[in-house]
Image (cartoon, rainbow, N blue to C red; front, side, top):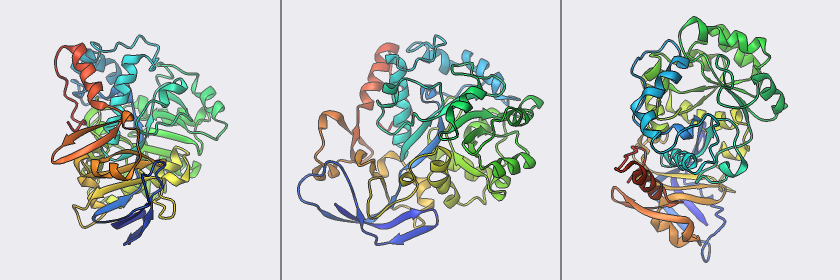
Length: 403
């Protein structure tokens, strides 16, 4: 199938008009079609480099803000309305066994949070789970990583010591760790402790980094490590955020994450807006690079996810043209104006008019209406919401679900 969008964003520094994209969908129906889309922009699907899928409950938690560090919030959060309400559906017994049916259901909702904002990939920061956990989602949730919660709290939620986790990577998969999420002396000392433990390498992805100073950022750039910026969560909990301007100036590979909705924004587009508010001169083009090329590097993913490939388009995000600038157009993304999202040749979400071109097993998909548009989606997010409602005894509204 050949499609011709108005504009195709092939990479963060290459935009072309009138490009014909050879869409490689595994289940095309009938003869190959040519479809002109003069009111649509094309991108590669976005990548959220940091989420806790099990934590995408609402509202946000944190009555004692600003916190000097997030470690205090971890305990304070357990008394919040959101945490206690979630306990009515699923109680974490301390094992972080997320293949539990109730836990998996909540995690799936978190995946839909990402899908409905244009994400095809999300990194779920939690102890490594069984293979079936990662295979259940409507988008790609990578399982090739090792992790530690933080330098200060170690792997309280499960996993080996940070040193052993890093050793397991052999430098070939990411090592992911919260670091410097605060403004006090404790969090300011975490980067020195990380280096002392030989945990700073080119496969290291540091989450947050609020406490990082310029010399720390220079060291991170020299190590070719990555930093994941979660501006909405940072400002909400701590009142400050990563020195992103300095990080970029020194060549740090900065990526963008949402954190969970218990502290972060509603979705990745909220993070775009929070990033622009924190650094008004930051170009949206740079944000796009963070959620495509930079994220692919940090998470050590297949390079095909970083760029839009016209000759072999198996990863595609089509968005209605709202802003004349294709990068500024990203700030307008809502579920309603996502025309189509395809990842690894599988249609994941889009307008129902695409169904006539795909030979899909509709037992795997559901349809719903949002705004003035009829949509199809892989899986059944409405049923997930219904199961939560049944357990709670009332309707629970998740603002990232578009129905």
